[in-house]
Length: 340
Image (tube, rainbow, N blue to C red; front, side, top):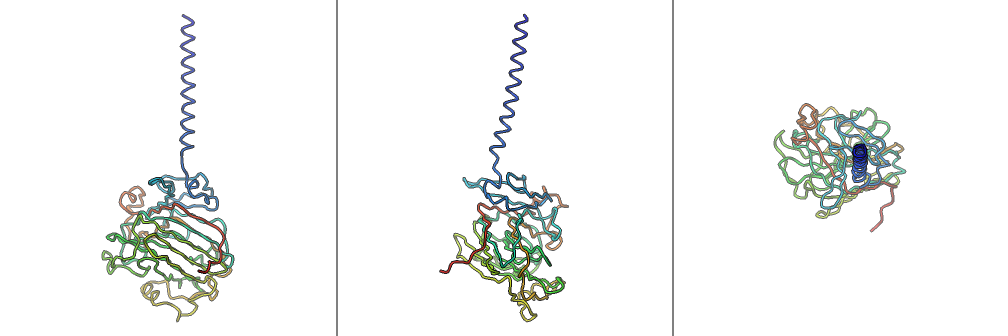
């Protein structure tokens, strides 16, 4: 009888031990099978991040957060997902939410740097005011100043109106304003489709759909190469002509009132800001850094976008969010473009 009891006790202990080991093994397998953004794009050690719910992290190796910053596999290809609602927790200097990387290293334009990305925009807000230039758009790459007015010499946008199949890719240059920064303005340049200034004729009426635009889910790439104070931009897409631009960051094109483009006068005619001029040396000698991800421009204040009381789950369920997928990206030193 005693032998039977001892045997039962031994078997029970052995079973519990095996169950415990099995649980540990399962947890270990789940941890080992998790794919992090840093596994897909290995430059994450050079960045910090701000998520749309206010989460911040300076350590992005083996970091992810569901619903904001994670990995999706589509037909065997891994993509890093950046997702952010129209309303959430914003940065100190902006009304717009973001799930966006910020480069840890800062550099002056004369030193420069290079950022590349291959991506597709999966979603932009479907709510907003068509007459507001920022409606239905997301910024997918930036150069941001870390000094002075902390303006942005580069913002790369994707924008698509709700009833359109194709959206636009364009880039904005914000002047490094001379004097009071209330006079700051953006000058916009189209890549594929429209530029920033093309808006609807009323809050619910949209402009003509761009014939050479980019669809949601359509892959394209950009390269931002800053070398010796000059910014070289290259945009490529399988179904579109490659487009390049050159812009000095150390010598202004907007240093007098006469230099203000007609586009700017039109966009800012009914706004408090705008109408200023830029320092003659633009961003020369000023610290800058790259940003990449999803910087949602569809806030409730300027675009009248629906935000469902700030409830993130409701915004995601009802189209009030931006979502951008990157499969490749690099960060490194600037270089002189090769001559063809």
